[in-house]
Length: 406
Image: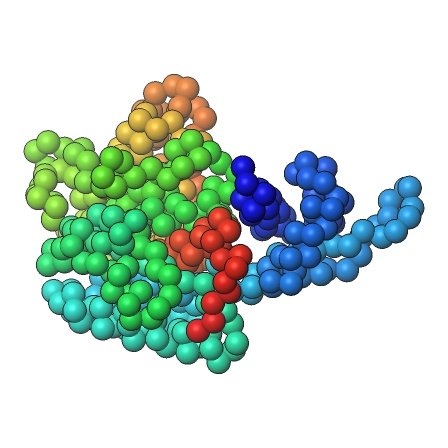
C-alpha cells in the first residue's frame, strides 16, 4: 500500500473509532488500533484541524500519575446532510448532523402521477434546507435520497416503483447533482432504513439483521454478514412482494397474495374499517362516530382501553405480519428483526404476540436466536436513512480534503 493510501486508511480508522465511542484519549488509540504514538498524534491533529474532532478536556492520570491525557470527541456538526424521502404524495426533507439528529424538517406536496412536479417539489425542499445550512454557517457534505421501489444505487436511477406506477428510469442522482453541484446518493428506502440502524441504531454492533417498515407498503432492509443485501441487479430484498397466499387478492405490483396485503399497516387499517361495519357497537366504532379519526393510534388507544374488537384485530394483524417474518428467519437467520414506524404504538403486547408466533413457526435454531424489537429512532427512518447515505460516505473518508459549504 502506498504511504498516502496508508495514511488515509489509518485516518479513516481513527475517525470511525471516534464516531463509535463517546470520548477518547489519544493514548487509548495506540492500544486499541495498533497505531504508533506519532501516527495517532499527527492524524488526531489533522482531524481536529479539519473540524471532525473536538477537544474535550483532560483525562485522569490513573494510578501511575504523570501527564494528563488529552481527550477528544467526534464533532457531530463537522458537517451536515440534506436528506430527502419521496413519500406518497409528499416530499419530506431534513437537515441532519452527522449523528443523524434532525436540525430542520420540511415537506411539500406533489401529484403522484407527475414525476416532473415531484422533482420540482424536491428541488424546492432541498433549496430551503441548503439556505438553512448557509444561514447557520454549516458545512453540507451531500444530499441523500430515499426512493420507493427498485433503485440502481451507483447511478442513482429510480428504475420503477409499485407505488408510483408512472415513474420509471428517473435519473435522480444526475439531475440533482446538476441542479445543486453537491454529491448525491440515492437508494431504496428500506435499504436506507437498515443503513441508519447500522450506523446509529440497534444494528450498530450486529452483523446480520433485518429492518421492517410497514407504513403504507411493506419494506425490508437486510444486513447480511456485515453488508447491505441488494441482489444481482439491486432488486433483491423485496420481501413485501413475496407470495404468502397463492389464491390471495391482487397486489399493486401485479402479483397475487403478497405479504404486503397482510402485513402492512395500510392492509391492517382496511381490515379494521371492514370490522367496524360488522361491529357497530364496539368502542372503536363509537369513537369514530364521535369524530375520531380511524387510524393506527386510535386502534392502539382502544386496545389499551379494553376494546375486544380492537384486540382481536391486532391479534389477527400479528398473525399476518409473523407469516412473512418466519420466512425471513428461515432464509437469513438474522440476529434481530427491527420493526419501524407506527407499529411501536401497538406496544409490548403486540411485540410479544409477533415474537411468540415467529418462534413457534420458524425453524430451530434460527427461531431461538432471533430477537424482535421496535426501532429506537423517534423520527421517520426513511429520512434518517437518506441522511445515513451521506454519513457513510463521510466515514469512508471521501471528504478529508474537501469540506463543502452551501
